[in-house]
Image (tube, rainbow, N blue to C red; front, side):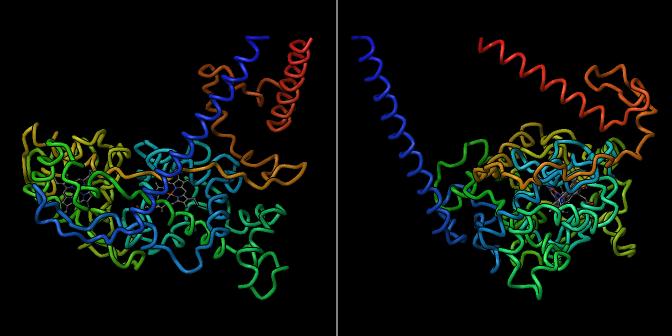
Length: 445
Ligand code: HEC
Ligand code: HEC
């Protein structure tokens, strides 16, 4: 009896503590949000111990928010962003290659899409991508919405045969139809016409609205620019000086450290050659080792020779979380990226200590990632949004058959003659379900 009462008291005590803790955490969260709201971006930084390369802090979501960016549209865009079922095999979503649970990329040298197909370049981060003048390493899309049209049908990404095929999958799900009606119903002539309602234009518009929310303000650097002298370590301050002495900010300027900041999505783009000093002996080695001159750069878009090896200056925000580096994704870590840039873009040869300092400074550009909640995706009842035979015409890979490698990757196609992969997976699922039910029964007994 006595111990029971103690237990109850203990439970009450713990609950109370939890509630107080949660309230305090929420209050703190709100404070942080307010700080960002009140930020006026440009600061009087002359009194700071080291003058920062740019006196503008991260401008925050308000700066790139567009008129129609309602909560409902952002939520729809988030669902589409996370939905792998609009890829050919039902396995690849935007988030596969631009993982917003981490640095907004895929940590791979070059991206891998459906059927393990790889593309020619590295996935850039989507964090803060709403601030870019232009999209892609070579700037071939002006806006986020225009950019989002590409991956759905790219062979090496989501691999759908055409946009209509992807949209048809979305049109087949009642809850998606409802969301589109809510967001775009007033803008189309006939909301009952699903082809008009669930159009490519509306789809990429929603995805772009979600991407615009992917902002990371309030980094230690931003706090410093706003006057908090203690926000950076000694080493980061040294690194900030070296960053400027070397001349990095001549390209990586502005609050995004990407050579631009106003008029986002104007399509103008800030392009710079890489490498600039290809005759620097150190750079020559890097070019060889990291394939730096294998792609034509912006010339691939414009056909203009003067655009050869020109690239959009990438943002350096959160750069510590987006290794490997450069468009080839061949430069393995941040210190090496600093060395490559110094030699190839500035004809400089910084000491190890200077490289470490600049790297430390770059880590001060890591902002606060907003808390993400996994979206619940709309589901058709009792059927699969992805056809059972999706991707089945892709047999070459199976034939190559490295079946020995992976025990659970049972090669049903070969081992169970006459049985399709889909049916085999279904059978496997049924058997596992039956086994689980049996197991839980036994547990209950
Ligand atoms: C298979 C991996 C993959 C998938 C899936 C994928 N992307 Fe990408 N994404 C890339 C690669 C690689 C690039 C760079 C391509 C280039 O510059 O030529 C890129 C570029 C981008 C950029 C430009 C960023 C910048 O800094 O220029 C944005 C934004 C983006 N993708 C968003 C999306 C969205 C939205 C989706 C889903 C509709 C998506 N991506 C699906 C790999 C992928
Ligand atoms: C002449 C303009 C220019 C200068 C100067 C310059 N950069 Fe860059 N930076 C670029 C371009 C362009 C790229 C993309 C190159 C590529 O992908 O091949 C880049 C890429 C990077 C990357 C890799 C980003 C990523 O996401 O992969 C880092 C890190 C970087 N620069 C840091 C620096 C540092 C540190 C300095 C000073 C030592 C510097 N840059 C000087 C133009 C410049």
